[in-house]
Length: 198
Image (cartoon, rainbow, N blue to C red):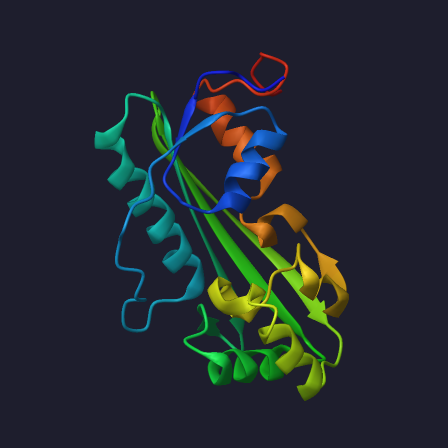
């Protein structure tokens, strides 16, 4: 059962992350944090998403007395981080690169609390089927991909493009729930049953 009062501060405006936490019974106080998400020169994807997750959690800490959670997700293909599309041409270019092949989705999570800041990192491999230019154009016109890393949302209309997934589905949506639950347990944040997760 979802707690009536917030028990965690979510350093993100993402409705997807809020919904994922609600699904495991964690009611949140939302405190979006505006941080620079530009990768450092030569920065690989794994330290990039972990750095941003930790920076978001730290940025929200002064705004609350609750434990804070920051998270960041990146789509990576050929070693390159694909961010959110700037416009239709950019989105089309990204989807053409992802079409008919595998790519990695990397998600970092950081939770502050009595144990300091604890972090975890998850990689999920996603395979997209071949996507035609007509489908890419039609998908852009739905407005769904405009604010999504890699230019697609696995939980939305782009699910019809997904041929396979190896790893955490919820991590691709925005938050790996198994790993997040482990961090919450270590920080003393209970889940839906009122008890700490095992």
